Every structure is written in C-alpha cells, then in structure tokens.
Length: 351
Image (cartoon, rainbow, N blue to C red; front, side):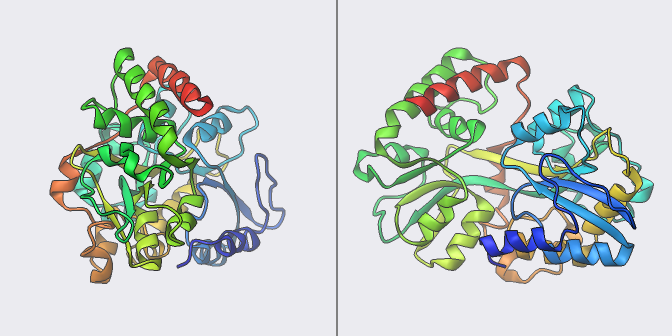
C-alpha cells in the first residue's frame, strides 16, 4: 500500500462515475454513492464489490467532518454511505440525519470486536446507527536523528529549541485538544476560560511551527526529513515509519484522542439495502484484512485482526496497548459550545 496521488487517482478511475458535491445515477445498474475521506479504502475492494454485485459505485472525498455535515444537511444530498467520526455521529443523530441499520442485512457485524462496540456505543447507543470502520490515536511523529530529548509529553511541541521544525495538524478539535491536554484539561471541555487558555498557547506556539497547519503534506515532509516533529494520526504515522526508519511515534503521557470513524447511512439514501450490503462486505474478515493492510489504520474487525501478520498486530502504533488506550479519550459533540472552539480556531489560524 502506498498513500500517494496515484492511489487516489486509482479510486477515481475505477469508480464508474465520480461524485463531487453532486452526482449521477447509473442507467444500467444499481448505483451506490459513497462519501469518504481521501485514500481511505482499498480501490480494489470497490472494483470487487461492483463486479460481485453488478452495481456502480460513485466515490467522493471530503477533508473534514464539518464539510461532511454540510453535505448531509443539503437538500440535494445523494449519498448512500458516509464515514464520519465519533463526535460527528452524535451530531448527525441529534439532527436526525442518519438512518437506523437493519442488522439482519449485516451478518458480518459479528466480526466486530465487542470491546470496540462497547466504546462506540458511547456516541451511538446500542450501535443502532453506525458500524465501526477504522480507529486510532493522535500523537507525535518525530525524527530520532533530529530530536535528542525524550518525546513523552505534548510540552516538547512548545520547546523553542525545535523552532521551525514542528508541524501542527489542521483540525480544530485535534489541535486544540493537544493544547488542552498539555494544560491538564479535558478535550471535551465546556469551559470557555480553558479553551481561551489553550487558544493563546497555540497562538504563542506558532512562532515555533514550520507548517501551521498541515494535513496530508505532513507525511511527505516527515518522510523526507524536512521537520523534526509533527502531530499526526496513528495510521499515517505507521506508514511514515515504514517509509523512513528514523521516524518514531508516541502517544504522550498526558493522553490523547482515541478516535473512531464509523459507517452510516443518511436518511435520504435511495439505496439503504444496497448500502447495508456494502457495509456487510467491508465487515468480511478477508476484506477487512485487505483494507486495513492498505490503509494502515487499526481495524475494529476481530476476525481480520486474527488473520493479520504480527508486523501489524505487534506494532503499538497500529495496535496500541491497553495502557495507551486507557489514557486516551473519545471526542464528543459539544453542541452549541462548538462555536466557542470554532471562534478560538479562527483566532489561531489568523494569528
């Protein structure tokens, strides 16, 4: 698996009709419209599903949960499946935008780890509306030849010794969470003073930051030894470490975000049963194994994990220990308080 532009183009080419904030319906076969993150499914699996079920898959990508929410709120939304994160699923439920699942159509749901299901029930009670797809952590990816201090705390990202060598992630919840955790606060805080303090610390930190704020470009920068440290998702870190053996990943002692991306069906879907067939397909053990080997993010599929090479299962970046998971927290929807975070983020980005 290589997370490069060529992989993204492959997804676009094998989709019979690309959807980009709109869509088209196939004339000769049933059509499934999917909205997902970039490079977040093995394109061979889309092609296989099309061939096995005689359907057309239209596949579109978006960069953030917030943009996904805008799309699903739209009166002309045509998507049948999407892959939002934990806190966004809470918001989608609150706004009555997603449909309950008919689990009789998803027998492979039995392959999902019961421990994972227990965690995800915190944002989808009873897991009635979503199925876990991938999960992971947020941490620090660092170059062992460029960093000669212990990397065990978020504090190192504020160390002036590494000015111009630090990358922060372009995400309101993740970046503010880093600052909140460093200050000893809850990543789901509803305290305006705590958010303001975290905001001010991030504004001060920008003088030390090489790239404020990056996303997919972080991987290339770190692999090519152009920065010393970066805030990054665990799957991307795993891939980077494979490409550059001088890189290492850590979840700091203060804790982090334990995130989950789940599969949901918008209430506006015209193909709910076909969408459930696709979910069941992705939950097949062999399919899930192939998918996680392509994506490098952690699979919630216990049957697939049993098939994986120890190269994955024995690596704590891919498969964090219980001790690491215990100090991590799942994001929750903040309701109206989200605006406090958004306002703080605007100040940080414009500073």
